[in-house]
Image (spheres, one colour):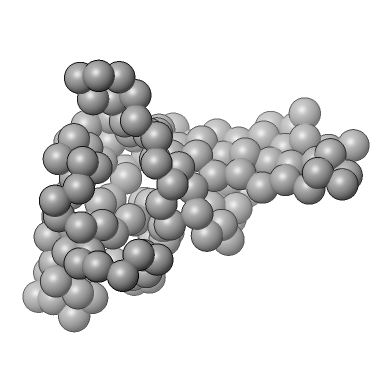
Length: 131
């Protein structure tokens, strides 16, 4: 097992298409798959403004995990980001929000994505399993 430095963790986050966002609700932890973008040391997600995610994560602690594996060689890697989520609203990338990020995350589901979630990391850690 090899520990990854922060630069390698951010590189892998930038190359990955989908990760899992975790937060706690009154009934316990929630974990959902979402796609993301990386910009200036922040993870960016877009979702519909009425989702449970938006309702529960604003100004709250969250965790985000991305990984990759090759079952044939029994190798892989994992990156974990822990930090605080911040929700803002903008209709699209051309909105007047002066904080509109580039790159703009492009969600897969076809619906409104007016909520932008920024994950400001407190900790970024990763590891790689090699042969």
